[in-house]
Image 1 (tube, one colour):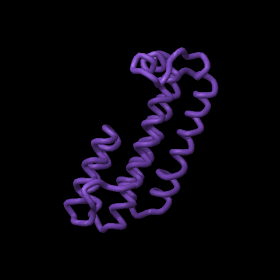
Image 2 (spheres, one colour):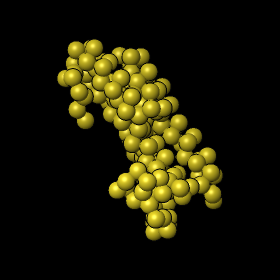
Image 3 (tube, one colour):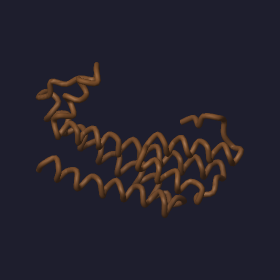
Length: 144
């Protein structure tokens, strides 16, 4: 398989998790099993496989921007970075849904935050923090 082929598989898988959070926020199978376990576990396994097979061949590092650019010059390691985003953003989205449910935040107010988290990670978390605060149930910064 090529990195592009793996990319074309993991992206729709991520979408499954996000759709589960958006359309089935009160279903345990959607929030816990799909978005909280199955999708992140698949991403973690693929991520680990890429790291085990590609890390040693890279001259890059995390110690400088140039080093990170060198890491991401390898299409496999660039894909690993993308999978890292997919996994963690989905877990943040899952937390948003669970936290909103616990605090009584209407799901329709959370959906735009989920979409922003899916597309722009931290911006979605920040927007959820604002929504959470607007409903009077949260401190200034949402704790995880």
